[in-house]
Image (tube, helix red, strand yellow):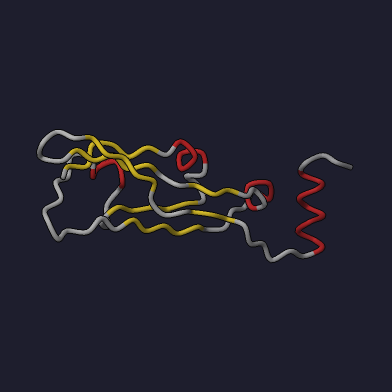
Length: 105
C-alpha cells in the first residue's frame, strides 16, 4: 500500500498547539511512502499549552484522514486517531482572563 494523501484542515488551524508525526516524521513528507505487509502506520500527537488564552480554551476533536492506494490501484481512506482538547484545569483567574480577552466586559 502507498500513502497517497493526508488531509486535516483543522490540524493546520491548530498547528501552534498540536505537534503530530506519522512514523516519526512530518505527516506531509510521508505521502508516497510504501507500506509493506506487516508494516505499521504510527500516528502520534502532542498537544501543548498556548500563551493565547482564547486558543487555550478552544475545544477541538480532530480526526485526520489518511488515503491509501493498494498495488491494484484501489483507493482507500480512513480517519485515524482522535486528537482532542476537552480538558481544562480551570481557575478563577484563567476564566477571568478568557472572558476579558473575549471582550465580554
